[in-house]
Amino acid sequence: MGYCRWEHCPDHDREQPVWPDGFCSNRCRQQARAAHPDRIPAAYCRNCGKPIRKPPVGPTPDWCGPKCRLIWNREHSLNGTGDRCRECGEPIPLGQRGPEPAYCSRNCAQRHRRKERRDKSGRRTMQNTDMISRLDTAAEDLSMRTDDIVREAGRLHRQDETSRTRTGDMIARMLMLATRHAPDTIQDPDPNGFVGRLRAECEQANGAGTSDRIIEHNRLADD
Image (cartoon, rainbow, N blue to C red):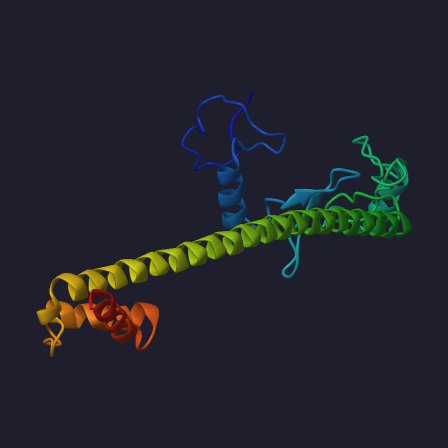
């Protein structure tokens, strides 16, 4: 508990939780640093705690100088968080800026990446094998469906031929009955009349000349 160092803090006169540098919040720290850049440090040395001013160009350093940097790196040669290399399991050395690495060395990083590529290639091969198996199954199913369609088409074709044969027989029988029981309608029939259409259907169903042969045969039979 304490009082915020920033004189323009809304709670400057009230005791409140403050950070070790004497500010109650990051907002007060930034405002004080902008108002007094020569008095408010941008950071503190990670080794000796000496205030560090922000340089005109570039990020704020972590140490006040090369000596503190070397001392701190020597004392913290191993990662204090307990992180270990993803490849070999050894503790990860610490001594460079930036995010903490995931591997203890470049060799381990390269070895782990090669292993990941092999695993990825193996998974891709398994996926391809599974896809080929599914395609083979689909091809077999399609072949069976094609055979069923061919058989159904053949059945429908035979059924159509049977239907045409029966239709031709019925038309021939109707023309035969007309010749025997109404011979006067056969002489010079109207093409658009019943007998004319009957003869045309008979020619189409049973072949050219069929109607004439049926009429001649039934006339001779009557005579």
